[in-house]
Structures are given as C-alpha cells and as structure tokens.
Length: 231
View 1 (cartoon, rainbow, N blue to C red):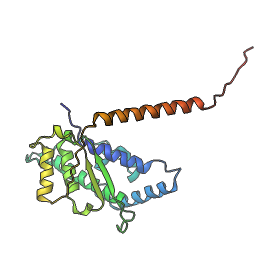
View 2 (cartoon, helix red, strand yellow):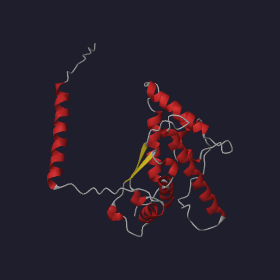
View 3 (cartoon, one colour):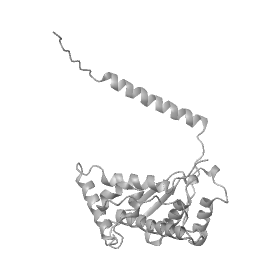
C-alpha cells in the first residue's frame, strides 16, 4: 500500500515551478525580469503579522523568492481541514492548512500576474500526478484551488490518476463530485488507454533508431589524442 506524503503532489509541482522561476537568472534578462516581477507581487501580498511563510516548510526554494529564511517548522500533519474533531491539536492543524492554502493562492496570483493590478494575466498550468495516492490535505488544497472564483482564467489544474485504483467511495472521487455538483466546476475527463501492440512496436523502433543515430554521430566526431613522453 502506497503511503501518501503530506501535500506530495503539490510539493513536486510547486518546487518545479519555483525552480523554473529562479534558474538562469544571470544568463537571461527576460528570466531575471520575470523573477523580479513575481518577487515584487509576492512581497506586496506578504502579511506583516505573519512574517514567516508556512509554505517554505514544504518548498524551501521559495525562500529565494520571498527573501525570507523561515525557522524550521514542524511538519504539517496529513489532516483534512474538514475533520470534525475539535481537539486543540486538530484546530491548530486546520488553521495551518487554511493558511497554507491562502499562501499557495498568493503564489499563483503572483506568478500569473505581470503586475499587481492584474491587467495582464499569464495563466498557469499546474500538473499534479498520482492523485490516487493523494492525502486528505492535498485533496482539500486541490478542491480549494479548483473552486476559487478569483483563480478563474489564471489557473488550469491537470490531475493525473490511475482510474483502476480510484473507487466510487474514495475521497478523490467524492471531491470531484462535490466540485461538479456544488460549485459547478468544469471538469474534463480524458481517458488514456494502453498502447496497442503495433503502437508499442513503433515506439520501440523509433527509440532504437534515435539511439543508433546518436551512436553514429558520436563515432563521426573527431577524436583528439594527447601524447606525453616520459623520460
């Protein structure tokens, strides 16, 4: 049985996003300008009462964007914000999850807006893989993003799952039904079937041909020899 990592799909996707924003800053002026604009948008949304971003405990590379090195925080438990338990620990966990959801939304707004006035929007496509193993907190965050009206036109969510591992009673299936029935969220289902035998053969042949071409190119490259004389 696969043990879900808290916020696992979002950690992978957001880490990849931040690395794209923070890489090659010295070699490309447009990349540097993009980084500075996103950084400005983020800092303008920063809550002075909450100087530390909880999201940096999940995505440490985000520190470079917000110019803040947060203290080491305790891991966020894999708890759903919809849990009915009213114990103090559960309440604190739900508060952390709600805060983290808002920080993710702020990051998306900062990335998709080229200015703080939102006059020019660059939509973001967030790809989340292996949702059949997602924890409850990840599904809560996904539902919160998908149903947020302020993100319409700014965010496209692509969720990937193994349909044969998702039952009708699963939390993921229940979340999709809520989105369609309660918030009228537009969900497009794309079924990707297995490759046929002929398609698989064609794919393998194509890969082998490319490998052979690469080997031939390497053989054709001039080889330089250096000779050293030992006395």
